Image (cartoon, rainbow, N blue to C red):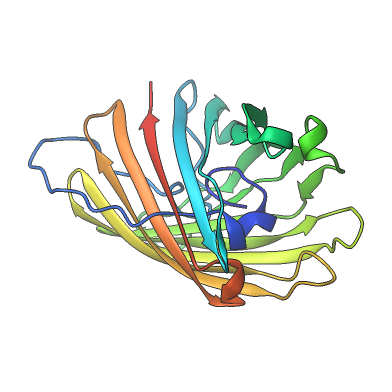
Length: 256
Protein backbone atom coordinates (compact mmCIF):
# COMPACT_ATOMS: atom_id res chain seq x y z
CA UNK A 1 0.00 0.00 0.00
CA UNK A 2 1.37 3.36 -0.98
CA UNK A 3 1.90 6.24 1.30
CA UNK A 4 -0.88 8.03 -0.43
CA UNK A 5 -3.41 5.36 0.43
CA UNK A 6 -4.00 4.30 -3.19
CA UNK A 7 -4.41 0.56 -3.93
CA UNK A 8 -1.12 -1.26 -4.36
CA UNK A 9 -2.43 -2.60 -7.69
CA UNK A 10 -1.56 0.79 -9.16
CA UNK A 11 2.12 0.52 -8.18
CA UNK A 12 3.02 0.08 -11.84
CA UNK A 13 0.82 2.93 -13.00
CA UNK A 14 0.68 5.67 -10.41
CA UNK A 15 3.56 6.92 -8.39
CA UNK A 16 5.79 9.55 -8.04
CA UNK A 17 8.03 12.67 -9.17
CA UNK A 18 11.62 13.79 -8.94
CA UNK A 19 11.41 16.95 -6.85
CA UNK A 20 14.25 19.49 -6.99
CA UNK A 21 14.12 21.67 -3.88
CA UNK A 22 16.32 24.55 -2.81
CA UNK A 23 18.00 24.26 0.58
CA UNK A 24 16.92 26.68 3.28
CA UNK A 25 18.36 27.67 6.64
CA UNK A 26 14.94 28.31 8.14
CA UNK A 27 14.19 26.36 11.30
CA UNK A 28 11.43 23.74 10.98
CA UNK A 29 10.43 20.43 12.51
CA UNK A 30 12.22 17.35 11.10
CA UNK A 31 10.51 15.51 8.25
CA UNK A 32 8.93 12.12 8.91
CA UNK A 33 8.54 9.03 6.76
CA UNK A 34 5.59 7.92 4.65
CA UNK A 35 4.41 9.98 1.65
CA UNK A 36 5.66 10.85 -0.91
CA UNK A 37 7.10 7.33 -1.05
CA UNK A 38 5.16 4.35 -2.37
CA UNK A 39 6.50 2.39 0.59
CA UNK A 40 4.48 3.09 3.73
CA UNK A 41 5.78 3.51 7.27
CA UNK A 42 4.51 2.36 10.70
CA UNK A 43 4.42 5.79 12.35
CA UNK A 44 0.82 6.94 13.04
CA UNK A 45 -0.25 10.58 13.15
CA UNK A 46 0.16 12.06 16.64
CA UNK A 47 -2.91 11.67 18.84
CA UNK A 48 -5.36 14.54 18.33
CA UNK A 49 -3.50 15.88 15.29
CA UNK A 50 -4.08 15.86 11.52
CA UNK A 51 -1.77 15.02 8.60
CA UNK A 52 -3.36 15.91 5.26
CA UNK A 53 -2.22 15.97 1.64
CA UNK A 54 -3.48 17.75 -1.48
CA UNK A 55 -1.72 15.88 -4.28
CA UNK A 56 -1.37 15.45 -8.03
CA UNK A 57 0.25 12.57 -9.92
CA UNK A 58 0.71 11.18 -13.42
CA UNK A 59 2.25 8.16 -15.14
CA UNK A 60 3.93 7.62 -18.49
CA UNK A 61 3.39 4.06 -19.72
CA UNK A 62 4.39 2.38 -22.97
CA UNK A 63 2.77 4.22 -25.87
CA UNK A 64 0.67 6.62 -23.82
CA UNK A 65 0.56 9.15 -21.00
CA UNK A 66 -2.10 8.83 -18.31
CA UNK A 67 -3.84 12.13 -17.63
CA UNK A 68 -2.85 13.77 -14.32
CA UNK A 69 -4.91 12.82 -11.30
CA UNK A 70 -5.47 14.73 -8.08
CA UNK A 71 -6.94 14.06 -4.69
CA UNK A 72 -6.92 14.56 -0.95
CA UNK A 73 -5.63 12.20 1.73
CA UNK A 74 -6.76 12.84 5.31
CA UNK A 75 -5.11 11.23 8.36
CA UNK A 76 -6.11 11.73 11.99
CA UNK A 77 -4.52 10.47 15.19
CA UNK A 78 -7.69 9.22 16.86
CA UNK A 79 -6.05 7.37 19.77
CA UNK A 80 -2.58 6.59 21.06
CA UNK A 81 -0.69 4.64 18.35
CA UNK A 82 -3.82 4.65 16.13
CA UNK A 83 -4.37 6.58 12.89
CA UNK A 84 -7.56 6.80 10.83
CA UNK A 85 -7.03 7.42 7.08
CA UNK A 86 -9.33 8.47 4.24
CA UNK A 87 -8.32 8.78 0.57
CA UNK A 88 -10.42 10.89 -1.84
CA UNK A 89 -8.82 10.73 -5.33
CA UNK A 90 -10.48 12.81 -8.04
CA UNK A 91 -9.80 11.63 -11.62
CA UNK A 92 -10.57 12.93 -15.12
CA UNK A 93 -13.80 11.46 -16.51
CA UNK A 94 -12.90 8.59 -18.91
CA UNK A 95 -16.45 8.44 -20.29
CA UNK A 96 -17.84 9.81 -23.59
CA UNK A 97 -16.55 13.30 -24.21
CA UNK A 98 -14.10 13.07 -21.32
CA UNK A 99 -15.62 16.11 -19.62
CA UNK A 100 -15.68 16.70 -15.89
CA UNK A 101 -14.28 14.53 -13.13
CA UNK A 102 -15.30 11.40 -11.25
CA UNK A 103 -14.40 10.08 -7.82
CA UNK A 104 -11.94 7.21 -8.10
CA UNK A 105 -12.14 4.30 -5.63
CA UNK A 106 -12.60 5.76 -2.16
CA UNK A 107 -10.13 4.36 0.36
CA UNK A 108 -9.96 4.10 4.12
CA UNK A 109 -7.97 2.28 6.75
CA UNK A 110 -6.67 2.11 10.30
CA UNK A 111 -2.97 2.14 11.16
CA UNK A 112 -2.17 0.61 14.54
CA UNK A 113 1.38 0.62 15.92
CA UNK A 114 1.78 -2.32 18.29
CA UNK A 115 5.55 -2.17 18.87
CA UNK A 116 7.35 1.04 19.88
CA UNK A 117 10.87 1.77 18.65
CA UNK A 118 13.73 1.40 21.12
CA UNK A 119 15.70 4.62 20.64
CA UNK A 120 18.73 3.21 22.46
CA UNK A 121 18.63 -0.28 20.96
CA UNK A 122 17.84 -2.06 17.72
CA UNK A 123 14.12 -2.76 18.15
CA UNK A 124 12.11 -1.12 15.32
CA UNK A 125 8.59 0.24 15.57
CA UNK A 126 6.01 -2.00 13.88
CA UNK A 127 2.45 -1.29 12.71
CA UNK A 128 -0.47 -3.07 11.06
CA UNK A 129 -2.26 -0.98 8.37
CA UNK A 130 -5.21 -2.72 6.64
CA UNK A 131 -7.10 -0.66 4.05
CA UNK A 132 -10.04 -1.07 1.68
CA UNK A 133 -10.82 0.74 -1.59
CA UNK A 134 -14.40 0.88 -2.80
CA UNK A 135 -15.28 1.66 -6.46
CA UNK A 136 -17.75 4.55 -6.77
CA UNK A 137 -19.78 5.52 -9.87
CA UNK A 138 -20.13 3.99 -13.35
CA UNK A 139 -16.50 4.70 -14.25
CA UNK A 140 -15.27 2.62 -11.32
CA UNK A 141 -17.42 -0.52 -11.35
CA UNK A 142 -16.01 -3.55 -9.59
CA UNK A 143 -15.51 -5.19 -6.23
CA UNK A 144 -13.65 -3.57 -3.32
CA UNK A 145 -9.88 -4.06 -3.23
CA UNK A 146 -8.63 -4.88 0.27
CA UNK A 147 -5.08 -4.99 1.60
CA UNK A 148 -5.37 -7.69 4.24
CA UNK A 149 -2.05 -8.22 5.98
CA UNK A 150 0.20 -5.17 5.60
CA UNK A 151 3.00 -4.97 8.17
CA UNK A 152 5.39 -1.99 8.24
CA UNK A 153 8.62 -1.53 10.22
CA UNK A 154 10.88 1.46 10.83
CA UNK A 155 14.21 2.14 12.52
CA UNK A 156 16.06 5.46 12.85
CA UNK A 157 19.76 5.95 13.57
CA UNK A 158 20.77 9.60 13.80
CA UNK A 159 19.86 11.37 10.55
CA UNK A 160 19.10 8.07 8.79
CA UNK A 161 15.72 6.32 8.74
CA UNK A 162 14.90 2.99 7.12
CA UNK A 163 11.34 1.71 6.78
CA UNK A 164 9.55 -0.93 4.77
CA UNK A 165 7.47 -4.06 4.77
CA UNK A 166 4.73 -5.55 2.66
CA UNK A 167 1.35 -7.20 2.55
CA UNK A 168 -1.15 -9.32 0.69
CA UNK A 169 -3.96 -7.73 -1.33
CA UNK A 170 -7.34 -9.30 -2.15
CA UNK A 171 -8.11 -8.15 -5.70
CA UNK A 172 -11.45 -9.67 -6.83
CA UNK A 173 -12.89 -9.39 -10.33
CA UNK A 174 -12.79 -11.03 -13.71
CA UNK A 175 -9.20 -11.92 -14.70
CA UNK A 176 -7.88 -10.30 -11.51
CA UNK A 177 -5.50 -12.02 -9.08
CA UNK A 178 -4.64 -11.57 -5.43
CA UNK A 179 -1.02 -10.52 -5.01
CA UNK A 180 1.75 -9.75 -2.53
CA UNK A 181 3.61 -6.44 -2.45
CA UNK A 182 6.73 -5.07 -0.75
CA UNK A 183 8.82 -1.94 -0.38
CA UNK A 184 11.86 -0.55 1.43
CA UNK A 185 13.05 3.06 1.76
CA UNK A 186 16.23 4.66 3.08
CA UNK A 187 15.88 8.35 3.98
CA UNK A 188 18.35 10.93 5.30
CA UNK A 189 17.67 14.23 7.02
CA UNK A 190 20.03 16.42 4.99
CA UNK A 191 19.35 19.62 6.94
CA UNK A 192 16.75 20.53 9.55
CA UNK A 193 13.97 21.09 7.01
CA UNK A 194 14.94 18.83 4.09
CA UNK A 195 14.92 15.03 3.89
CA UNK A 196 15.72 12.97 0.79
CA UNK A 197 15.45 9.25 0.19
CA UNK A 198 15.53 6.32 -2.22
CA UNK A 199 13.23 3.31 -2.38
CA UNK A 200 12.70 -0.04 -4.09
CA UNK A 201 9.21 -1.54 -4.30
CA UNK A 202 7.25 -4.12 -6.26
CA UNK A 203 4.32 -6.49 -6.42
CA UNK A 204 3.13 -9.73 -7.96
CA UNK A 205 0.90 -9.85 -11.02
CA UNK A 206 -2.57 -8.44 -10.26
CA UNK A 207 -4.27 -9.93 -13.35
CA UNK A 208 -4.01 -13.26 -15.16
CA UNK A 209 -2.41 -11.50 -18.17
CA UNK A 210 0.12 -9.36 -16.28
CA UNK A 211 3.53 -10.02 -14.75
CA UNK A 212 5.23 -9.15 -11.49
CA UNK A 213 6.77 -5.67 -11.46
CA UNK A 214 9.39 -3.70 -9.55
CA UNK A 215 10.51 -0.08 -9.54
CA UNK A 216 13.01 2.32 -7.98
CA UNK A 217 12.38 5.89 -6.92
CA UNK A 218 13.66 9.00 -5.20
CA UNK A 219 11.75 11.39 -2.96
CA UNK A 220 12.10 14.60 -0.98
CA UNK A 221 10.26 16.31 1.88
CA UNK A 222 10.73 20.05 2.48
CA UNK A 223 9.34 21.70 5.61
CA UNK A 224 8.37 25.36 5.20
CA UNK A 225 7.17 25.38 8.81
CA UNK A 226 5.60 23.04 11.36
CA UNK A 227 2.30 23.50 9.50
CA UNK A 228 3.19 23.50 5.77
CA UNK A 229 5.35 21.05 3.83
CA UNK A 230 6.09 20.22 0.17
CA UNK A 231 6.65 16.57 -0.79
CA UNK A 232 7.33 14.84 -4.07
CA UNK A 233 8.91 11.78 -5.67
CA UNK A 234 9.67 10.09 -9.00
CA UNK A 235 9.81 6.40 -9.97
CA UNK A 236 10.78 4.27 -12.91
CA UNK A 237 10.17 0.58 -13.54
CA UNK A 238 13.06 -1.91 -13.50
CA UNK A 239 10.98 -5.08 -14.02
CA UNK A 240 7.96 -5.23 -16.32
CA UNK A 241 8.93 -1.63 -17.10
CA UNK A 242 6.41 -1.25 -19.93
CA UNK A 243 3.77 -0.79 -17.23
CA UNK A 244 5.64 2.13 -15.65
CA UNK A 245 8.16 4.04 -17.77
CA UNK A 246 8.06 7.05 -15.44
CA UNK A 247 5.68 8.37 -12.80
CA UNK A 248 5.64 11.31 -10.44
CA UNK A 249 3.67 12.94 -7.67
CA UNK A 250 3.72 16.25 -5.90
CA UNK A 251 1.77 17.23 -2.79
CA UNK A 252 1.19 20.07 -0.38
CA UNK A 253 1.04 18.67 3.14
CA UNK A 254 -0.46 20.48 6.12
CA UNK A 255 -0.27 19.27 9.70
CA UNK A 256 -2.62 21.25 12.00
